[in-house]
Amino acid sequence: MRSLHWLLALALAAAISATHAQTGKWPEKPVRIIVAAPPGGGDDFVTRLIAPKLAEQLGQQFITENRPGAGGMIGQTAVMKSPPDGYTLLLAGGSMAGARFVNAAVTYDVLRDFTPVSHVEISPFFMLTHPSVPARNLKEYIALARSQPGKMTYATLGAGQIPYWSAIWFNSMARIQAVDIAYKSFAEATVDVISGRVDYFFAPSATYVANKARMRALAVTSASRASQFPDVPTIAEAALPGFDMPGWRSIMGPAGMRRDIVAQLNAAIGRALAMPDIRERMLTAGSEPTPSTPEELTKKYAEWIERFGKIAKDAGIKPQ
Image 1: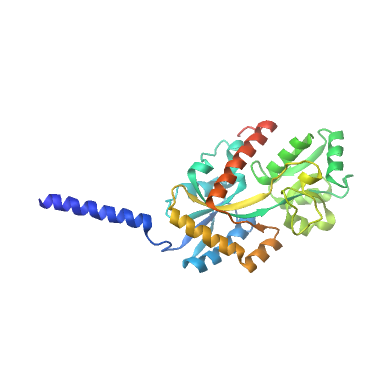
Image 2 (image 1 turned 90 degrees about the vertical axis):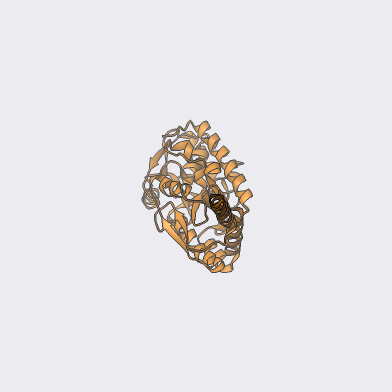
């Protein structure tokens, strides 16, 4: 009888523990936001901007932890394998939706292995050329490139990033043949575009702001014009209807996060992105705050996985 009582007591304790795990207070300790990129970039900027606002609202530190390497896979995989307790999050990029189409080492499935929390922002990229290129607008540039198949060059910063996808999709939609020149950083690529050694590349607004006198912006990659430069048309309106390839970021967690934690985080992110000081700093940096529901973010990743898959198929891209 004592043995039965002991077993019943253990079962009751386990049930209470499980219930607490599902409904316990959160957060009760610092929360890490993993950035799968080195310090100083756009991912880092966005994370460190919103982390203090989340801390203010939720009463615990939100610590930015940079885990770069392997094209983002080190940080992404670390989050995927973390307990889904809400204490390890990922600053995720739209490029995650296309990673498996270019990188054979990718083992995760975005929709299966992560919990979408909220969209964060959109950052249009600019198609930039040297002023000596004899094309004043995008239609003229496409005509010029078509007249010189295989002679125009463009810079990329590694397969799988949004500027890479932008160039691949642009070349495919425009039906032009151009030569890919790979670089390790935007700084290196910028030098060669400014000098005229490379004809064009897709770069963030900060690159255009810093070099506006030495570059020509033909268009932006987003569906809407950049608020900083309303005179620069979108690729879709200038020449290629349907083109939409901005950079964008979100907050994700490991698969299986509690719904109440996701709801708390989602609401806090939305409030942070609506704060005037946050909006002003993001807009100044060329970024548009765009919170979402978890369901909206899930739908966006599904749509972009399909988009990247089609671009890869049409361009004959295989995972390497």
